[in-house]
Length: 172
Image 1: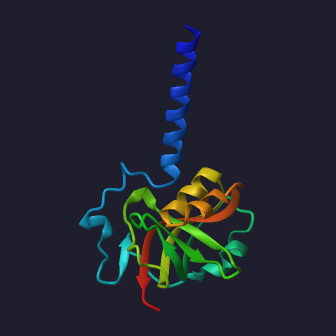
Image 2: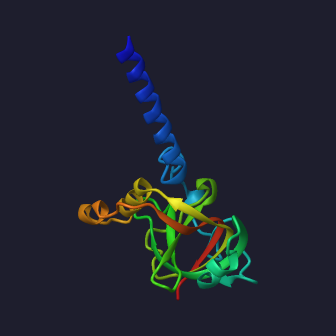
Image 3: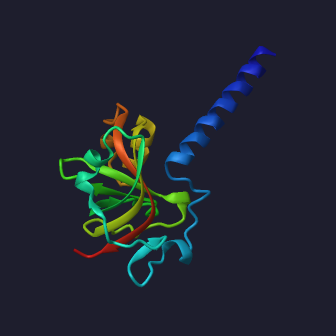
């Protein structure tokens, strides 16, 4: 009887952890690619329409947010890379050897997998987050990193993240 209860608790715990991870990384159930969530508008936009006016350089974002929990802001910068599985996230160059991960609100849109090297404008919420080892390894896998590179990720990382409700991509 004890073994059955212990087994049931372990299974429940695994499902809870798996569901918590799905909300923070790629969620296959929510990532169905359609013409609605993958096609850019005529202006090169994805998600809600973004006006470029007033966008701050993403390299200034860490100073702008400071110690605030979160900040609604419009940013611009350069895309380093995008998720190579479905385009469900991209990273932005922060200019100091670091990058910031940008996810898309409610999996409402995806960007092309070849977005690296393009300029972006985005509107959404910037915040500080501690990214777990499992998430970092998942992102590395999505980015096409080798097994050896993924296994080198052993520490969580406090980082600036961005949840975009809309993005414009342009060639540089």
